[in-house]
Length: 478
Image (cartoon, rainbow, N blue to C red):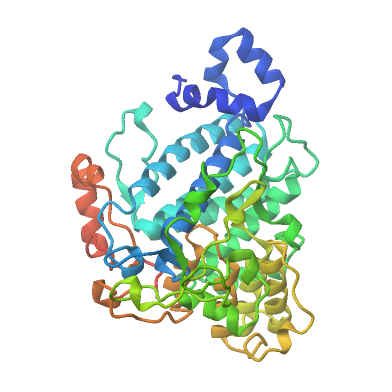
């Protein structure tokens, strides 16, 4: 195997995570060991780097598109006004493909070592990252991707249907590979600390997420497949409490540092959106103080409660006679968390399936479990009378479930955006300053270098999809 440039660049980073293991000794005495890494060598860097990037993107993209927060002052332009540049997705494309190279190598190493747990973990991570990639762009290279060493420099784009068919099958296979009697031997993993059962639950919880994602496509038979999994928890265990969630704990100890080098950058020239804050206010939600500061009068001295400003507003900031609520800077100061997939999300999935009649379960129970867990993951205590509020009580509608799921997916990469595109919920207000015919964009355009360097395959994909445009819906979209 040729030496991977990514392995060389990551060597120092990996050694921080791995500590004094047998691999360290072998690498230290034989530089050629870099070419024959263990299956676990890249696991922690993959988890940390992808989760950290996703957390930054929740702030820089999803918050604006989904009316959680916005730049302030902002008299013109910006994602919150749906003014989207053709390069908006470049970092997403580059970051995911960079780490997919390492996931591919991790899987190959695990198969060479005949280690089923690390192979299953690599398959789970591959499905996680490819689902994010295709949901952001549509058709993308998969089968021929990350194959430069095999001489493939212009990979064919796989269709979204082909990608989902493959990653869902991979997750099914990965679930069958996990061996709970076999220890993970290549150092402590930063996400589940070598609990194989937790990795298996992540695998199945991710499969539920992705089946629900494509459930608008009748040919996927997704609802029946989700019901089969939920009705057979012995074969398909999923997260059962918040402690089991795929939530990366960022300790602040090098190299597990906050994605924000300077926490103040998270709050500088920012405001909370009135839509997000108004939902929390109507619910009298205890997450308000965890997520945001109070607004103040114009002299900056007197708190006046939680108030945001409208996303996509028209005109300048002088129209607002107060200093709006801002982010709580503590959210990005270590110790902090990066959400990957939570128990709360699993409960909201079950609530939706019950509400739609696909499983025989108490939709209200799962809804309330999801709400409680969504607070617990932020170390917020729910009040005893929370569900007595008519705005919070389960009312039997999908709209009620999806509003709380929207709040529960706060700071969870692109998930609010993806779920809005699947369901159209929650209904987001429209403001006069919004561009793009006041329509929420539904995908990123392909990077310019992809269009230029892989032109034939790019054109084939764009022709299939109906255009390379921020309004071109992906295969599963409502």
